[in-house]
Image (cartoon, rainbow, N blue to C red; front, side):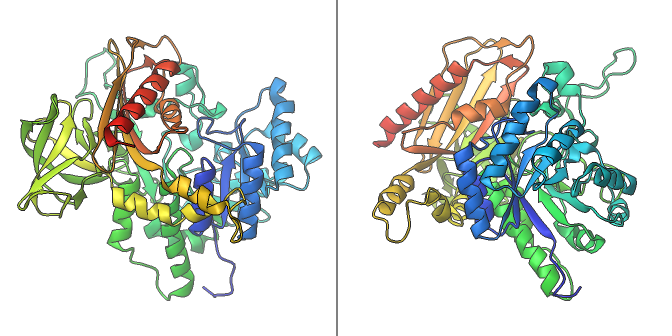
Length: 540
């Protein structure tokens, strides 16, 4: 491929302002994000007008485009409010709107003809004819269905007069292009309205026509995330305009690392005679930052014969650490355990682990003992004891490393400087810059674990990188939800509100056992109490 040919666009997700700057600083060509309404990730942080305006101005100074999602189905009574959201985007300087609702399109063309329109993947475009129809509706670009094979993508790219966009990394919906009614029917929350309760991530039992159970209960509808790094050369050669990373509900560090990695290999494609192979360490880091038991290549090579579903867990699993050999009670923390493992990955105090067993027990590693006694870290291949882990654990259980404190810290360094100066008050000559940076730098990274089960109060456990830990219990006994059960996203949104405390929540393991009604005030209560207790124990 000629070096002067226009490069494919790398499109990054931004669930909030920190994600936005993480994408800018790590090589994104464009960023997609949502305003406060009518976007398919209503539970992400999203953007107020002033935040949007400042972020877009920064992106444009870097030559990065900004696309706002207006991609839910719109009720007739909501049309004026949706157009108001589009107006805010236009004033802020967006380069395009990503839209699903065809009824909204004519109004957008009428009122904001200067803004390009991109048809959302929920438009279910899966062939050349669909692209031609999208072009006739006035779309400049269409995001192709995620279920297409490389041959089908090639065929789509022969359509003239319209750009194509393809998802290459991130979550894969169980249903075609996200056109799922299951969440709406079960929990009265629709993905097409931005509030999917992710029923495909729940455990199910398979039964036959007379109700006889077939096998054990499991996560029978939960797909692994896709990763097409190995396939980028074929996708680029097909003539795709833009490759897209999913993940507006994931962490800023996830955004930074995935963008940085895909940027590396896109550039390699255009500068090298041959593409690949992908370095094992790059794959390992992507799996560590977020993966559901590894990655799949989705439907890129047709229907999969196994390997598509996540299996034992629907959540982020990270890297396989080892198998529990022995379990003994912790001497310091009643009800917790110290487990013996032959580790397959490097491990350090402050890293997060999770055990694949009932309730998915785990937490932040606060204790490591190996061949040289108690230490802060251990290397792959060592036999060690780690603690203190809550929950019921037994020999033979599989343990995964779900977070790497050093990796998260190093990734954050790639964008923290830009994020700290996002309000424009920290120019080189500004005397306030030092104060702002110092205040942000003093924030201590913590990780949390939130547990909710019917008949019990909620529990929240937090730990800092020094191994200090605190736990808080709710006051209310949690009951089953009649409708609209609580989701992990809703709980996480509250847990992230660390406010004027010395802490910033970097990751949280949220375990909700069943369809539960969890009052927001209970989540806020345990967050406040746990952070206050942690602060008193750490001497901050």
